[in-house]
Length: 287
Image (cartoon, rainbow, N blue to C red; front, top):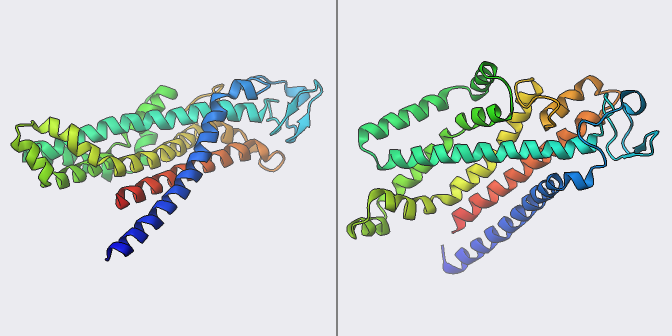
């Protein structure tokens, strides 16, 4: 490939990256900002209800007290918009905290496996492959059923079942860096293995790892919603998108907005995470 063709390819990749990153960033930024300012945007608390007077009001309705409900109300008279905003806090927190735990475990195990003796490396990779071979949904249901459902339990369960792909990715990237001249030069200057790993190898592995982590946030939010939908995740009266979707399944015909609003929000966040992950991956390939 000539230098002109290479420059044109890099320019096309950069424009595509900018478009994906902008779209994903705008969607995620809007959701995060709305969740952070939920108290200012919501005229009602997430648990405030008046079953008789305000149940199943259509979107854009005003109740008998003169309060406006942008997305209507549910079967208990609770404002769907308010619960959607407060539920975004819980769902986003679960996604981010889950990926932080998965990153800590995955990066630590991947780097350790890459730099350790063959016996230790084989043991760590064997454990990683063993957990990778287990169906994650079945493992999630088992762990969630054994523990009392709650926010902390959901984060721990999702984090403990999501580190394996990151560990494999970090291991592969770290091993590919071991033969590079700058790594060999650092060793020749007397740098220790762990210093070389955290100062040189891990930063070079950052783009694909960040792409996997961004994609994992959307996956964690989806899995949390699924667990909560089944009653094994965040428990009422706490607002989370999973329970919100679950609360609308009995009124999917008479009041579809109850479950549709959190469902659309969930899809938008997952799409935004996918766009950002693709953009980060393309950026890493073009670098």
